[in-house]
Image (tube, rainbow, N blue to C red; front, side, top):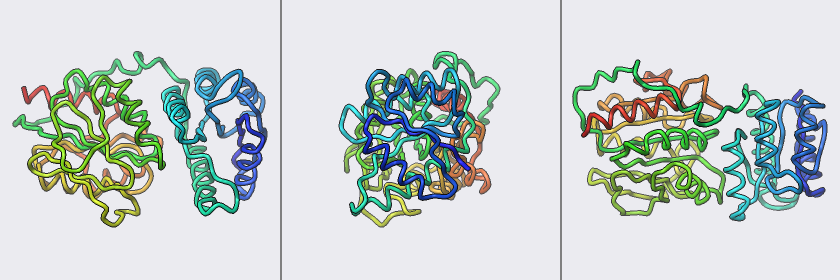
Length: 346
């Protein structure tokens, strides 16, 4: 049985979330509270398996509540958020404070999207409840590791693009990696991040403000410039051609997803061959795993996030099983490896 605390200042939202979660016999709501101060106290009192957290609440908001809980009594936290600009901004701040994932606020019963949103909430709660969390350390402390022990054994220095794929848990890892490579970045970075509808622009803004490198939502036909980061827009596949131009399309979903990491990695493998680095990060499923192997077979440098630091090791784990990853590393060491590769380009 998974024990849950729901934190939301709206009685209607608390009732809706409780109703959805109670529909699954493996889930049990042990407490509902209306602000972050109450949530932090309830965690100490109830010792839940997971906390569902709103972002805008009186007294103590979701960001501060997440920070306190992850500092004092770590427990998996899932943010439930709307798509208004201030809610999206607060959602990513909560991820930075230690929340594992976020989902959109489910609509009321009777809405066409209710069933899908309810299923997503239940699936997310079950998955995140299994994650082992630790006390949140200061970001400066977390970014002190180096890559000295890694030998790339690469003799040529011609990386022309870095391609990254991520899903569940990806935003915080992207922030760590992009922050780590920002001072040395001199090639384009193209990213597919699976994310809830309405949150891509907020992700780009958050990363742009916190990583020290320009972040863009990609547009069709633009040239991917050095030292710039391009994120696939909502509901469009993103690729890149041999001239460095970004190509977007509305083709069928790949692995049930659009945009898909698989589509991006295939295009990079075809356009850049050995002149590319591919990175597959935390996430459910297998999207990008076979294509990371394709990149490796073509001579690219390929990296998968290690299990210890992945919220969900599905995508990188699948790539590792296929022997698609030349390196299996933590986010800090991924940044170190990319810096090492780029240093050989200059």
